[in-house]
Structure formats: C-alpha cells, structure tokens
Length: 524
Image 1 (spheres, rainbow, N blue to C red):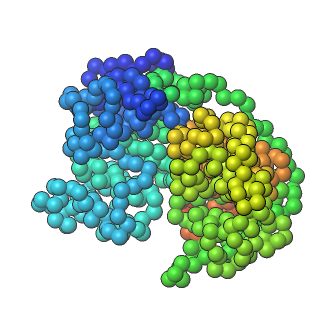
Image 2 (cartoon, rainbow, N blue to C red; image 1 turned 90 degrees about the vertical axis):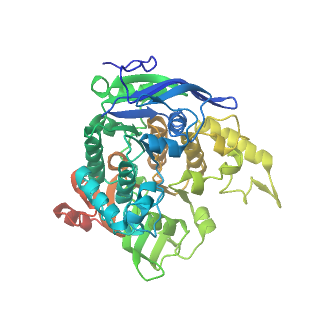
Image 3 (cartoon, rainbow, N blue to C red; image 1 turned 120 degrees about the vertical axis):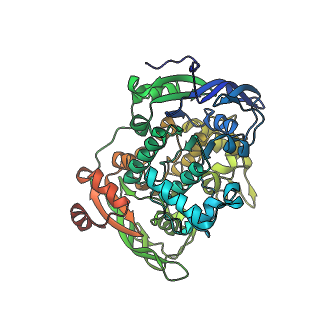
C-alpha cells in the first residue's frame, strides 16, 4: 500500500477507531476532522511536526482533553466523556516522556501505587513475583526490590511499561520513548515493543526518529497542521516521503560541511571533578579541548554526567577541582554573567523549564541574556523599542512562526520555542557554544534547522561542544566524537575513525573496548 494523503480509511475490525476528531483552542484548530485507527497486534507510528496535533489527539484518546467533536470506539465500545482512569480501566495506557514514578520507593512499591487490585488483595511478594514474571516474558529485566532513584533512564521506562501491562493495558501509547536511550537500549526497547505486539496488544509509537519507525512499525499515520496528511505501510514508503508529508514540502539542501583546518584551542577543560554532598564523584577528572571551527560531539545517555558537565561549564555549578579556560582566560571561578561576556553561549536540554520563561513574550525571552547591556538597557530603564526591534530581526532571520514579538512563548510549538533559544544564543555570535540535546523532541524540519544553524556557526570559526544521546546525529555533526559514561570521559576519536557499534556499547557502560584504547590517546 502506497501512502495516501487522504484521510485515514476505516478499518474493518480495528481495536481503536477515532473518527472526525475536532478540538479548537480559541482560533487555533489543534485537531480538525482527524481519523485514526489501530488494529490489534499492530505497532502504528504517529508522526508530525511539533504542533501538528499529535499530543492533542492522544490526550483526547486518554481522556485528558475533551474533544469538540468526533467519536472514539475502543474494542467495539464507545468512549465518550471518559477520564484517564476510565481509559486505564478500558485497557489504554499512556507512557509519557516524563515518568510518573517516586524515586524514594522500590520498583514493586511504584507498581502498587494507585493499583486497586494490589491494594485489595495482592501483597508485596505477589506483586514482586508478577513483576519478575512479566519482566521475563517481555525481556524487561527488572528487579522488584530496586530503588527507583537508583535506576537509569532505560529501566525507569521499563518500569512504566510493566505498570501498564500488569494493569491489563491492551493499547500502549509511547511518546518519544527512545529520546534518552543509548543505541543498545533502543534496540532492546524495540524488541520489547515487538514482543508486546506479538501478544495481541497494540502500540502507538510517537517519534521523530524515522529510522526507528521503519524498524518496528507496520503502518504510519502522519498529521500536519492539525489534519490528516496521510497513512501508509512502512514497506510502501521512504524516509524522504514521510518527511515531506510531515512538513508539506521538500527539504532543501543542508548547510554544506566546510573542511576546516586545525584552529586554535578556544575552550580548555582540565581534570574537572565534581562531587556531591556525600563525596561521590559525579564527574571524574574530565579533560578535553575544543578548537576554532570544530564541533566536539559527546555521546552519552541520561544520568552519566552530561547534565553536571554542562552546568559546570556554564557556571551553574562550581567544580570541586579542575580548570576551565576560554582563549587562555581562566573562567573556573567566574559566574554565569562573566562567562557570557567572555563569549560563552549555552543551549540547555529543557526548553520548557530551563531555556525559556513561557509566560513572557518572544521579545523578552530573546533579550534574557543581554537585558542589562545596551542597547536593551538605557540608563536605569529597559529600552523596549530595542527589545522589539531585535525580536523582529530574529523572528525573520531564524524563521520563527509566531504572531509577532508580543506573542507569549507558551503559545508556540516546541520547534518554534527551540528556534527562539537558538536565535538568542547563536544570534550573539559566541566564541563557544555548548548545546545539550539541542534537537530533543523536535520534528525533522526543526531538527534540520537547529543543526544547520550550529554547522553555520562552526563554519564561521565558532567552537561547539555538542552533547546528545542520538548517536546518528552525533556522527553526522561532530568533527571529533567522545563518550561520557559513569561520569568519565571514556575517550575521543576523530570522526573518520568513529565506530558506531563500539561507541554505542560505550554509551551503555560497556567499558573500554580495544578501539577505545586508541581513543584515549587522543584525549584533550
């Protein structure tokens, strides 16, 4: 079956059938007459740009949002006016990007929370045995007695899946489930998804990673601007066709990769160590440098020290020991403002809580770094016309889709919010840019835009430290590739010598492989 850009046809006997779903927020049509169906035992990809209507559609399915129109039938029964609790009872589970877990409790205790069956007659030992049995059946490898706070990201995700399965979920909605996983963990999760589907359950797989769609999905539904853009089997389409359906246009040429000579060292990091209050090393003597016209790409999965490293470099945490220098100037003891003035820029991982102030306007967010400096400041007052003028220029230069500088950030899609962050940081023409998961949760179009901007900065002589868990992206953007695991910089290797399989294993904590011995010779 080739892709059809007509609306989703009705299946003869679907597990889930959503027809004519409509939802409006003021003048914005989040969902407009959307049809969507899932057959039992099927993994269906749900794709679309940020702001295309995917989240709204799934929130309607799960009972978090009331639709303005349309019908939902699940296993032949109508769902109308239902709550999330009703959806769970019906057999629908939604696993969000941000997990609903209590770190201070064990795996078993988290499973029991809110589970009426456990509270009524199942005891701790019985729940633990069910967790072991389900884990073994689906290859989830969970210890019921483990403390959730000690679990890596991948196992917390598995816990959410076990919770859903034990509650009888027959349809699982997985929202960007691979965004913080290492390549081996991604492979393991996709295998788990296949086992779940093989057990006559179904999965809705929301993702922007098209390669994973082709590895695990039988069918794909694409939304664009709140409407159906098409539906097709994965066997009958290509990445390029899906990307075109998502954005409604062909992708232009990427920013050309200019071969740069070996420039001067700009950022020098020497034996940086960070300890927590108990003396545990979160960062263990990390040493590297970044040169002019270079992107040093560091791979690593959540919880291995990436957050601590970027916060130490940005001045948000003080290192326990070590040295940070920019163009020979010691910045180790300086604050955030002094580092900004020295030419450092920083794109944090979480645009919603760290990078932006959602209730403020685009103009105000674009001026957050420089509001105390001319021209944004005039004497003791803010120069509001200068804020407005800068915002107009940046909105045009960086292609931000908004009603104007006065629009609040919380009214924009995730992709346009990230464009504001990129415009603010790269628009300052920094000497060094630290970019942490800069494309996290972005659709292919927005991802391409962010990477193009970073490559353009590098091509103009800027130095970039780029941290991500997306190995394919790192190998495409980095001049040198490194790995952070367990708070240590395992090694750095030139791009042409990078072995994806070995790097993926190192990201998963696989220790030093033979190739990594050569990598360590290139440290710093």
